[in-house]
Amino acid sequence: MGNTIDDVIRSCAERYKLLLDDESAGMYRAFLGRQQEEHNYDLDLSKNERGRPAQLYFELLVDKLLLFSVLARRRKVSDEFENEKFVDSYENLELFRVKGAAAYLWDDSSLCHAYIRRIRAEKNHNLMKYTEILDELGQDPEVVLIWGAQLNYAEHIGKNRKKILK
Image (cartoon, rainbow, N blue to C red):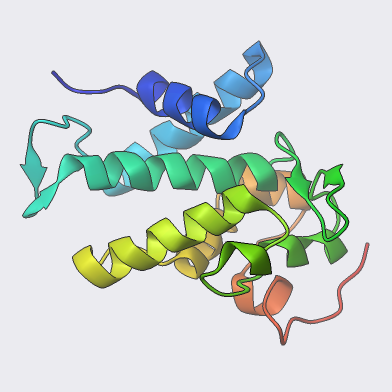
């Protein structure tokens, strides 16, 4: 039996403590619907798709939903002082910056875990990298609406990002 978008939302909510009020759940369903439409992921975990276990696509969507929820200002992340905060300014986008594959290097453990999972999935199964996901999410219509512009890793998050402050 196949999984649904709601299964992805539940899994992400349990793992990452997503806000699941009606408005957020609707936003997550719409986002995952756009992802399904664009990529046509098969969420039936008993099957293989394109020679890969469907579980890989399920986990990819969980990670995408985590990152989307932060960009959509629905989930807080930890900063360097362990304060929970929304990423609600261009300056705060640096909290997404890749810091390495060791948890102690990251301010937020959830972002670190997503990064490490994406390294393994890219290396072992040629799936999207963490930075590629952020680039894709930066083009999502809901993210563009919230931020007022398209976002990309190199320009807005990476070490050589422009200083664009709101």
